[in-house]
Image (cartoon, rainbow, N blue to C red; front, side, top):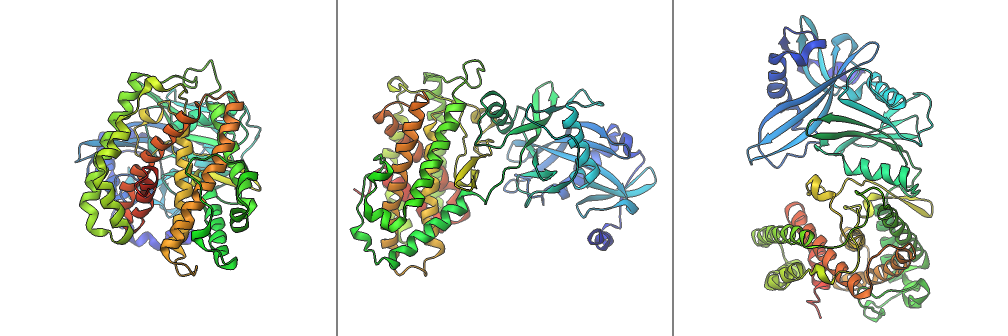
Length: 544
């Protein structure tokens, strides 16, 4: 491609190696220079690299495997990135060598001379030959060359041959490739010495439970080490969609807030309900329907139904111990309290260090939070497992509007990788399904406040009036979702407890989510700290 030819001036001084490319990773000198001089410069600029806030100490190649097509040799390389802050992360990089006259990508890792042959190390995913190779191996369902690498073909995969491949959207923490305009192969860049929850849950929902509201599992790539299996890739159905539910909800909230002026609504006169009051759609007051419209409540009803169906499926297997429901016990409670008191202390420290960045309502709510810190901590410590009658199951773990695709009047639920800050072990702990529900409620809250922040000059109301209307709207969203979710879950024999226990768990989980969000907002956009702070205030009834 011409773009790469133009930039070759930058790569005049190649790294020189005596080895051939076909034996490169058996050569100690190559591995040493590759993991230090070459990779340290390359990796820190990649979008998928998660160590930008830390100081890189050194990179080590911990494992590699060879995979060859008719014309090229590729390596899958597993890296351990060590940081001065005394922790490490693992990454996966597929790598190729291309002679200068074959170069067809601008994603160059470094110029090299391999045993006299000049060329470039490049990210192999940017070569169609490599993408086709991965696709063909998944179709066959095995690897001819390496016992370490396992290609798995899913039961539902009907594709017969490779036709085309392209990248999907902008590269984020993973790289997604669309095959034949029907399938998506997600390559995990950050990897864990354990099966990835996204692979585990996706395959379980498709092959064990035949769940239709998430992309079907079609195949995977993993590598087996002595320490455990590492998931490198997950192939799923490419589902038709009109974008994610976050953008959908932002558009809906903008329409609803614009309606305030169109319908000349006085925010103080809107009928209020308490948080967690369950409502059937026909019980929503006509003033709220006149303002927000019926369609948004119908969509929330559908989303709540799909969420409950996901949990029924995740808790519906009596054979696979990874997915059988379980009760609460002392071990879980110790794990939960340790985790949350640590997180709470961390957020308190961040808040105290960033108080000077806040003003107005955010500062007022922050001081309220600090004044009531003992009361908030007490909520986390008051978890009494002996009173819990409901069950814990595997959950989504990072459930919000951005993890949901809009498909006409319906929704697809996706990305079961879990909470990014959590360890891989913590992500697999069985938790109350209401934790996912709480995550969605926090996402509703965010969409409402983001709409107010992003359009503050558009609506002819004071910020205080908009916040007041937003809280009213939020409580109705929650009420309709909760009524539907509870009905569907209980009809599907999902044990979520009775009203008192449901309300306790929701309060607990919403508080946990809002405290978690507070750290993110204070570090990246302090102006938005008001969103989790107001969520904490309303759940703790500071305002009452």
